[in-house]
Length: 391
Image (cartoon, rainbow, N blue to C red; front, top):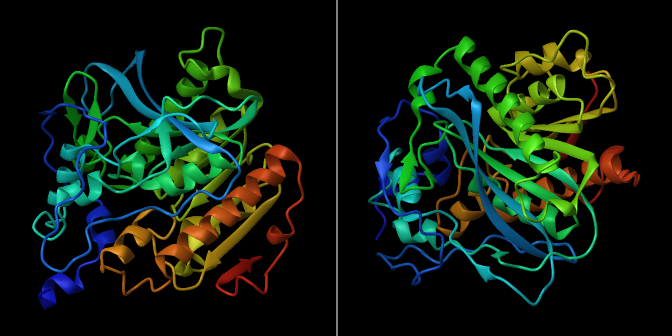
C-alpha cells in the first residue's frame, strides 16, 4: 500500500532544479528496448506516451555533436558538446523502438529528487514511445523545429510533443546541452551531470545558460543545414523553414537564439521566464508565442510583462487553466498513469498533452506552412481551459 508521504509526491517534483552532484559517471549508453518494467507494490509500472496524431510514422536517430571552436562554459575545459534526438516523418513499415531513457539517466533523475525508492528505474526506461530507429524517411522536404528542454531535465521530457510534430510532417531536433541536465548519456560510456546547476544559481547564471544555448542552436543549424551536413537524412530539411520552441529556460533560450540567428523564423516560450531578455530592438518582426501555466497571466511574471511589448511581430499570450510548470512536458501524462498526479496542477495529463500539441502545431502550421489556424485567433468552445491575454 502507498504511504501518505508517497501519495503526496508528484512526478513533476523530480524535475525541479537543485544543486546536484557534478561527477561524470561511466555507464554503457544502451538505447535498445529491454525487458518490461518490474512491478513493485500496487503502483502501475507500464507507461505509454499518447500516440502521435499525424499521418506519418515517426523515425528517430540520435546525433552527437562536438563544437571544437568553443570551450564548455560549465566544465571550463574541453569542447562544447550536444546530444540531439532527430525525429522525422517516416514510413510505417520499418524501424525498431528504443528506450525513453537509459538506465543511468533514469536513475539519476529519480535519485535527484529522492524518488528512487518510489518509482522503479525500469518504469522510466520502459516508458513506451512511438519513434523508431532505422525507419525509412517519407519522401519530401519538411520544416525543421528545434526543441530545448527545461533546466536540469533531459531532452526526452519533450518526447510526446516531438513525436507528434514529426508525425505531422516536421523534422524535430531535441537538444541536450552538456552539463545542463541531471544526467545525459554521451558516447564513450559517459553520463554528464549538471555542473550548471551548481554554477548558474542567480540571474547572471541563468542568462549565461540562455545565451550559451542560443549559440548551441546556431551551431546545430550549421551542422544540419550547412554545406556538409552531419545527419544522413539532412536532405529532408527545408532550410527556409526553421523554428524553435523551448520549455522553461529552453523557452528563454528560444528568444535568445532568434535574436542571434535570423534563420529561426518563429519561436515559442513554454512557461519560461525571460532570463535572457528580448532585445530592445525586438525580434525583427518574427512571430512569437508565450504558452504558459495558469499563473503566467499578465501580472504573474515580471519578465513576461516586461518583454511582451518588445515582441514586434505576430504574437500570442496563452495560458491553460489548471496547469503547472511541467504541463508542457511529458510528465503530467506519465505521472497520471503512475498514480502521482500534481495536485497543484489538476489539468489531466492526457489533456495537457492534447492542448500543448494543438497550440504548438497550430502555431508552426500557420507560420512555417502559411496555413491560417483559427484556433489561434481566440477562445474555442472545445477548449474552455485556454485563455488568451492582450495586455
